Amino acid sequence: MNLKAGGSAQAVTLTATAVNGFTGAIQSSVTGLPSGVSASPSTLSLSAGAAQQISFSAAPNAAANSSTASISANSGNLSHSLPITITVTAAASGVDVTTYHDDVARTGLNPNESTLTPANVTSGTFGLLRTLPVDGLVDGEPLYLSALNVAGETHNVVFAVTEHDSVYAFDADSGTQIWKTSILGANETTSGDHGCGQITPEIGITSTPVIDRSAGAHGTMFVVGMSLDAQGAYHQRLHALDVTTGAEISGSPTEISAIFPGTGAGSSGGNVIFAPGQYAERAGLLLLNGVIYAGWTSHCDFQPYTGWLMGYSETTLAQTSALNLTPNGSEGSIWMAGAGLAADTSGNIYFLDANGTFDASLNASGFPVNSDFGNAFLKVSTSGGTLAVADYFEPFNTVTESNDDVDLGSGGALLLPDLKDAAGTTWHLAVGAGKDQKIYVVNRDAMGKFNAQDNSALYQEIDGAIGGVWSMPAWFNNTVYYGAVSDTLKAFPIANAKLAAAPAFHSANSFQYPGTTPAVSANGTANGIVWAVENSSPAVLHAYDATNLNELYNSDQAAAGRDHFGNGNKFITPSIVNGKVFVGTPNGVAVFGLLN
Image 1 (cartoon, rainbow, N blue to C red):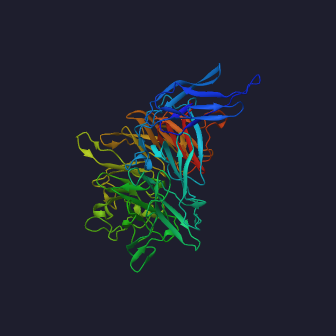
Image 2: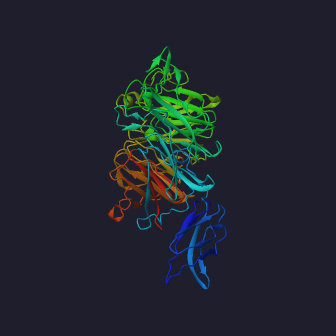
Image 3: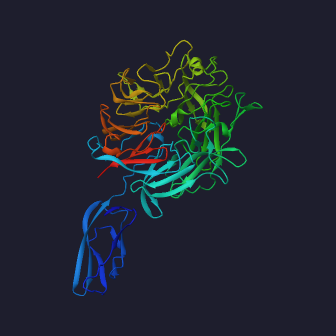
């Protein structure tokens, strides 16, 4: 019998079978229980042929161990005992995944994984444990809270959101559903796909939510959902849900709306107006200094639309700020293949926006004269509770790239840890790439702005080393991992605060559209594993040794399709935590782990 400290009770059924006409009562008891483990009832009276149960449970502080207890039965001079082995697993160590790609720098690194190693992630020891069923497409990355107290019991909990506007919480170890919540309003449905195949067949919850474990009575999840009411009006709402029940927190949800000064697409009376039906919230939510930030994308390139970034207080859900990135132009949306908005410790937000209007005429400060930032690598300040572009980088050929739909906005931004060059100078860098097959490394303190002749003000540019990017990279041990379209997964080491101009190593296999967004698990700087999902039918989960990208495992290796978990899904990022890997699918969350 396996018990989790603080977890659910496990029952044993006892049945007495009479022989030789026996009709007496049988007294049963449990002895030899390990410390912290209890049995209920500890004694009972059995009658022949009548089954009864004893439930065993381990207290939250029960030590991890394996021992043998006894169930004894007595009637008169007759007695019999049965041994029962009880294995207690300690409560989780406290590793959580509360936001897209593990942290607000969006490194994709969990450095606290002590269970999975390159030695035990093989098809003989590792594989598909189960699939957690849900009611729609899972486009957001699964999130995870360890040792969460739910109604007096401790669970490791994995959370999933669906395009059917549902939020689920499952016990990450047993697969039992803990709760399910629909965030649809009364008489509402999810949105249709607006004739755009990017999110189809329905649009509900697209982006990765964010969790604040310290918010509310038990912890709060923040999630954005789209819906359609009975009168044909579209809604975008920010919801705050109790992580232990799925119930809306007081004051939740809030209706999302915004206006911003400008004469661009969708404007009226000198203001650009946010029309909820024209947008989807695809980029992963960012929680920064008590504010939830959301970026908005269009349905394909269906006009009119512009680029929106908005902030909402996590305590009141009131809007704190709104910024339009193309207020006097059009397009310039934020989608980044679902990657989360990134942030630094000074409260600045970083992201890549898509093809759209850019004013090639600059003011004295080097900013576009009409404040239109289409196809840019952006740094947005949150100082004073106001969103404002603080710096940016724009490719020299940005107008041509936008016109040809070869923009940066298909990829996500990653903030690198502080790096020192050979002279000892510390650099604050970020990396991003899009459709033009170039890796852009920006100096976050001076991003380079715009020069119509060349990109000479950019910190570093790497051309031709990867294919087009519809994903985002991961970072581990001074190495950046990229998985471009129709390309292999590639590792670019960093030396003297510069990325290598060519990959040091790459995977043997390549990844079809949209490429892959890798994630990394490691124990500190040891036992690094790079995980990547292949958007194929069936989908394939790959695991690579982080030191050389030699493959350790893939879900096609086991016989008879043992580890197959359904068809692929765009933009899926795996979550790796506490010995398990969670992968969103078109109808569930696949759970991988050690088989024994």
